[in-house]
Amino acid sequence: MLLVCAFGLLDTMNSYLDWQFDKINNFEYKLALSNNYTEEELKVLEDLYGNATSQTLAIEFENGDKKETNTVVINDAEGYLRQTDHNKNYITLNDDGVYLTEKLAEKYNLKIGDEISWHILGNSTWYKTKIAGLNRDPQSQNINITRKYSEQLGLEYKPDSLYTNTDLSGIKTLAGVETIQSKQVLRNDMESMLNTTKTLVSILIVVSVILAYVIIYNLGILSFSEKQYQFATLKVLGFKNKQIKRIFIKQNIWLAVIGIILSLPLGYTMIDYIFKSALSDAYDFPAIIKLPSYLYATIGSFVVAVLVNVILAKKVKTIDMVSSLKGNE
Image (cartoon, rainbow, N blue to C red):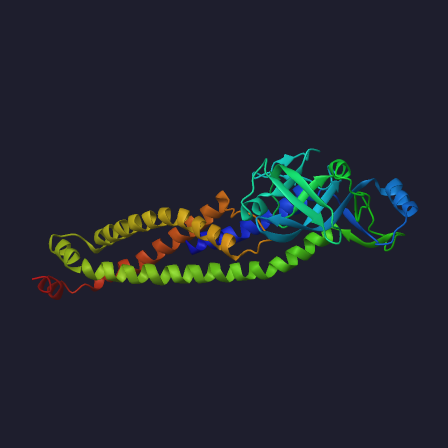
């Protein structure tokens, strides 16, 4: 089970990176615009790098008798800043309402068709909007709307980010731009952060193998002790040590196989619980265990089981037939 968890941690982390940086962030560079950029600077940037932009607004919305803070992302970067559903399939934002992430909707017990009231922090105008759909995002739990819908609400659109696939690797500064962020650099930074997790996973794999060896060995010793009388009887009946060893190994291997089969779903349940309980409210990604990981865990556990039982089977030669037979009288 621990081996399944260890390999599952690696699979889940890699799945998260692919989801965030390959599916959702479909751009190479993100330009964080300055707070005081001019219309002329924005026009130059859009002429050079395209007009895929977005604006993020801090909001307060009503949740029953409580008020909660969150953010609204006005998305005018379709194809660059993409949304996905529960199964990571792409969805298109329509202009008839707001889109909540699934985790946010679940947290506040909201569903498609419900209405939410919210206002921009610093502005007293409240908006009552229908939930047009739900999307799933691994690391940002917020509200998304299209630029067209924001204009229908009477909001002034002032983008704070621009997305492009133009190569900006040699450019350090641009007029009207606060920072230039490379998606690859962002991914590399995230992978560096996850390297610590990968080190812990490697340690977990080693500990799992050692623990499996100790547990199987101790259970094998117990099983061997209980069967000494039977083995001594078989010797009296003319069975050779080699034959008795084979019987002992087969019996224990079948038990090990049953244990391995049961541990596979238990391992997934454990890793899924870990991610659901340990992650903060900002993250939402499921546990992923790929077929090769199940195979590695199965083969590793099976090899340990065989190795331990081969070692224990050598004790057949040391059975004291007289004491074993008398001990069962």
